[in-house]
Image (cartoon, rainbow, N blue to C red; front, top):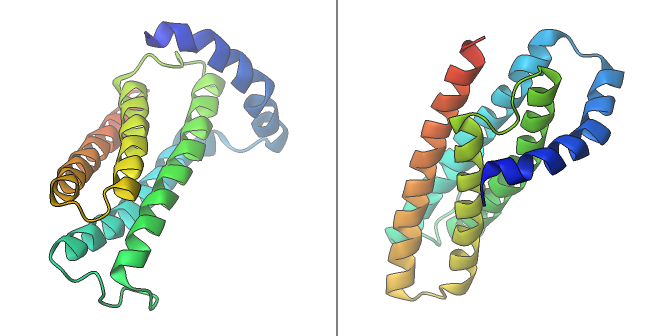
Length: 167
């Protein structure tokens, strides 16, 4: 399915639901332009970065060690990564609303395309993580896919920064 098939319904939805709320709040222009990026970078590097580190700790056999906050590494890793998926899903909607408010094409950038790819891969990763049950091949696939997803999101962040600086 091409992004053009999604553009009209998403535009209609966000112009009905999201744009009026933000217009009512009347934030300054710099908030409209940079708020999405600042929030999502925080989620990526804090939750995603630490969650990835914990995933590698589990892979090294240190899943029963204590993580920041007192939980075991193997308990905190899925919570952080699910939190990242959840906040990316919500934050992506905010990014689309701000894109509309700035009069830019909704899905016309590589940043938008990489966002949809990243969310889809995070969803697949979550399914793999909850169904792998210690299977060595599935754990290896989970590790490589997770590393690839984090690399994709690093590129996604760079594309977003380039997008933000382009106007």
